Length: 428
Image (cartoon, rainbow, N blue to C red; front, side, top):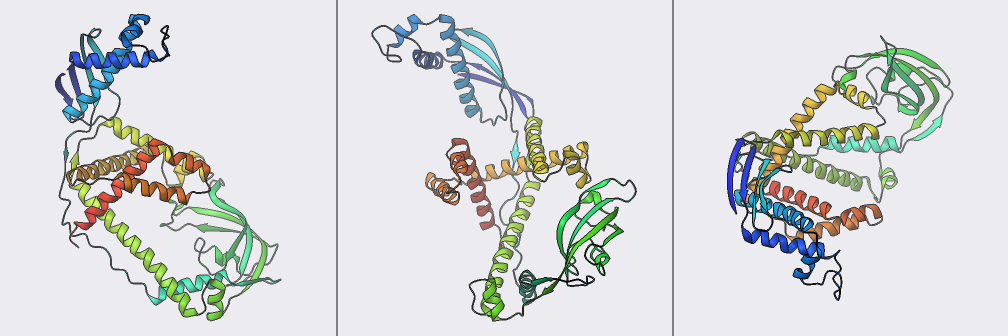
């Protein structure tokens, strides 16, 4: 074929393509094979008649159209490979000349990933944090376990620090009196003095007895997780359902046996330290990987078409809307929780989409340059691992059999292997 390429901008090109006779002949042959399945030729089974006899039975216009469609698809795909273009969506095709089976000229206008320039990705001196689990951290876990094992006994007296109170509560905006999403609960168990609630909330419950109620105002701290509640004053109405005195077990071998398959407190502490160390190592490795990627991505450049960014932005929004639904929130409530509106959310989502796309493209380029691949054996092993993980989940087993999901898992393995490579060539 003959191809003339014209760059419309950094991420859009127009290809003018002239097909060869051999390509049209191949497309016609495939068209006859496809159409023969529905053509009956006397003396032959469906699909087994010679091509020349099948052609005589066909509407010439139908055969010409099928040949054209097959030729366009095949030739366009070959042109992308020949021109080394990475298309991000379906092209706009314009057929300028088509004489069935002898001549085909057409243009394809498409969005592409533009020039990609890799920055330095080796010897970046990104160190992994040292991991050291202290006795204090182990004892904090022991104390949490101790609280979980506490015996509870309902008492008829005023609540004090260390007690568990079961309460109903509801919060409204002090100024507008509008309900606050997430600021209400029923039969909620709360240990006074645990500091697990908003600062000042637990103090308001000390001295209350069963069936007593209380109204009070709390100002949320300026560093509160939900940005829409930072510094907001909320009026709470609280009703105490019960007051439970808690009796904590002694920290000894007997407590260790209650926790799990341990015979001594020392065994329990050793197991806790091992678990904490494993988690800390995982977090340190993840932090190092993220810092490496940020450094590589910021030092690299790639021209990304708006169409691809918009597609990823829309996908991110669908994910977040689904999260809102799962969390029992309306979309408006979900946005307000993070002090966002539609406009600011889309701006933020677009920035995240750009980073995701850029990171993926750069990792793909590094994998190509370093000949990093995922073998079929590696992919099969991962598929078997996932299948065994979801043995009793028939729906997941069905999903794992789909070719597109197998490809998705292969892509993830490629990303993992590439990141592992980057860590290995990073000067510690």
